[in-house]
Length: 571
Image 1: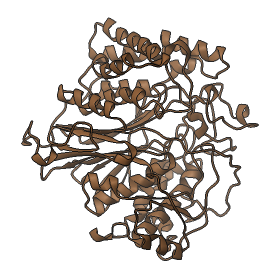
Image 2 (image 1 turned 90 degrees about the horizontal axis):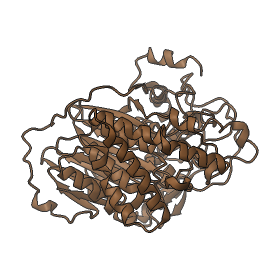
Image 3 (image 1 turned 45 degrees about the vertical axis):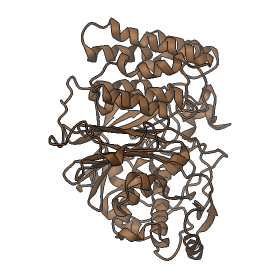
Image 4 (image 1 turned 60 degrees about the horizontal axis):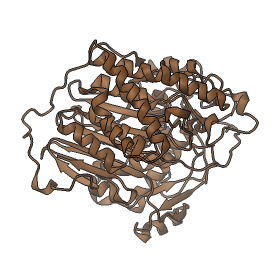
C-alpha cells in the first residue's frame, strides 16, 4: 500500500483529499445564503416549547443530547452569535450535563459549513496516543477499556477553541458562561475543581490585550502549554499514567478537507479515515445505484439493501481505516467509482451475505485474495453525545463529542477519556497503536449540501458502531422518503452487527440484524427468508440529532429522538 495514493489521485477520484493546514490569520466574513429571508418571525406551526425534542423557526435551530446544552446554544444564537459560537457553548455545557458520555478531556469530531464560502471543513478534535503508548506496552494484556492508561491526549478543549476562533464572533468567556453556571450548581468535587480550571482559561484570555483571536490562542496555551498541562502531566506520572507535558504541548487541532460522495443528487460530507465516516460514504456510493420510491421506506428490499451495503463498507473499515498521517489510508481509494461498482455487484438483492470480506481497492478487485488473521477481545460498545446547530445566515455545525470510562486528573477536575481502546495491537494493521497516532474513532457527524452548495442538513449520532447505520437510515428517510426531521429521527430502526467492534475489537456477529419491534413484522420474516439472523432490539438503536433547512418555506427544523433523551429548540 505504499505508492497507491499518487496513482489513484491521477485517475480523477471522486471526493476531496484529507489534507490539512495550519490555522489561518484571517477568517471569512459571514454572508447570508438567502438575504430575503424574513427575520425574527417564527411560523405558528413551530411554536414548540424550548428544549423539547422537535422545534422549527426562521432564525436558528439546535439539537443536542441535553436540554441544558440546547439552551446554552440558543442563548448564544439569540445574542447574535454564530452557529460556531452556539455549538461551542453547547459542547462545553455537554461536558457537564452529559458527563457520562462526554468528558472535557475527551475528543470531538466537528464539521463546519461556512455560508460565506459555501464550503465544508473538518476540525479533528481527536487527541493522539502519548509517546509512552507503544504497541509493546499493551501487547501482552491488550489495551484497557478504562482508567488512566487508556487516555489519549485531550482533543476537545482545543477543538472547541479553534471552532470559535475560525468561525465564531464571541469570546471564550462568553461561550463558556453556561458551562460555568452548570459547574457552579454542581455537587461533585470535580465540579468545583473544573470550575477553577475554566476560570484560569478565562483569565488567560482576559490578560491578552491584542484582540479576540490572540485571546483565544492564549486560552488553548493555558490548557496545553501552561500550568494546567503541568498539573495534568505531573498527576499522570505520579499515578502511573502515560500522559506527559510534552504530549499536551505538541497537540494541535488539525483542519482538514472533508470527504464527499454524491447520493441521489445530494453532496454528503464526512471526516476522513481516522473516523469511521468513509464507511457511510461507501454505503451511499453503493446504494446510489439503486432507486428508492418515496413509498418504499422500510420495506424488506430497502432494509436488506442498506444492511448489505453497510456490511461491505464495515469490512473495508475494519481492514483499512486508520490515521492517514501514519498509514496509506486515502478515502479516495475507498470511494473510487469503479471500485465501488465492483463492491456493489457483491450485493445479492435476494440473499444475505454471511462472509466478512474486505475488498482490494489497491488492485481494483471486489475481494482480497487472502484474509488476514486477527485476534479479538471481549469489549462492549460505548456511547457518545450529540450537537448540531444552524444559524440565521445558514452556517452549520455538526459535532460528535465523546469521552467515558476515564478518570479525573487530580486537582484540575479535567476528566480524561479512554479512547486508546479504539486502537488494536495487530502488527502492520492501519489502526495499530503507536505514539503520536490518532485512534480510529466512531465519531462521525454529517453535513449534506445540494448541488448549488446550499446546506440541507447537519446530523450527529451517538451510539458507537451504530452511528453510521442510523445516519444512513435518517439520511434515506429525509432524502429518499421525503420525511420531515421529526419523523426521520423517530422512525423505528435496524442495525447489523456484521463487523469487528470498535471497542477492544469484538468478533463480528456474522449475519446478525437487530430490528426495533415497532417495525412491521413482515419485514423481519422477509429478512429471515433471505438468510439474515434477525433479533428484536427493544431499546432505541443509536441516538440521532438533526437540523434541516427548508429553503422553499424558509424554515429551520431541529429534532432529536425523544426516546433517547435528545433535545431540540428553535426561534
